[in-house]
Length: 364
Ligand code: SF4
Figure (cartoon, rainbow, N blue to C red):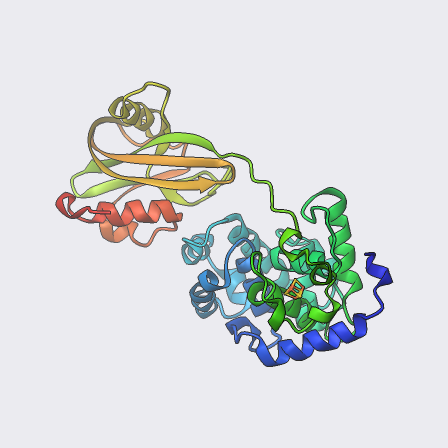
């Protein structure tokens, strides 16, 4: 069914907004229409669940209550508060954009927002529709499912023509007033009622206008996302000790990912290479240090885009040499107290916590 041919849109809009007014979750960023709070929350919510974002949002706003405070902050402090939330480029973009907005103001002007780092069509629509009631659409995982079902769109709304279709649909369904609330309502419906599997159609406020339901095709729309099989990667890391201090390294600002974040040096193990030999090689290559590899600190598994990484970190004694920057921007010898407050990714946080415990108490 074509988006433009839908004659019942006014009724659907009214029903959805009435439902949203009565049933929306009282999330901290919904307390007012402050563009700064909305912007921070929307950046955090990209690729991350509402439940995970809650405590990060509160801490972040406490530390940086205004765009001026964020603009004036040290990037390391921003990354620290983002540690564990993932997709750290978002934090660096947010910080860089805050420097512009602190000067220009958080204005109701799409041209200003579009030019900011990290602001794509989703953030633009989310912030300006919610803060200023601009009639701008948004599309994310929940809304693309809801829209596909409303119109019984059978293509894949995540790619190609389907992607074009879903943005057109998101724009076409928007009312002229309360566009921000309507965008939120579509997402809320997707998050709480029109779920990926077993949508609660009997509780749905717009069920009588839903084409997928009429056709009994809710379970088939949209088609499941095609996920590539992850490539397995084996990595070794080294916790180089010098007395009670351990060498932590800061990634380069031009690194492929995790720019300016801290970590224990690590790299891929070569095929057939014993872990101890790999640890010695990796330490020399990445830090310039000669080391003697020792016992295992921990093995952590994590996924990065299409890679599934298993990282084993070994303790190592410093046998000679000095840290040489190059592969890393900086290295620091830190005690547990020092490394506890570094900006690190979730796997590195696990390793840091494990490393802080005496070996006999290191049970994962
Ligand atoms: Fe989703 Fe069912 Fe509502 Fe349609 S009727 S929007 S499939 S919950």
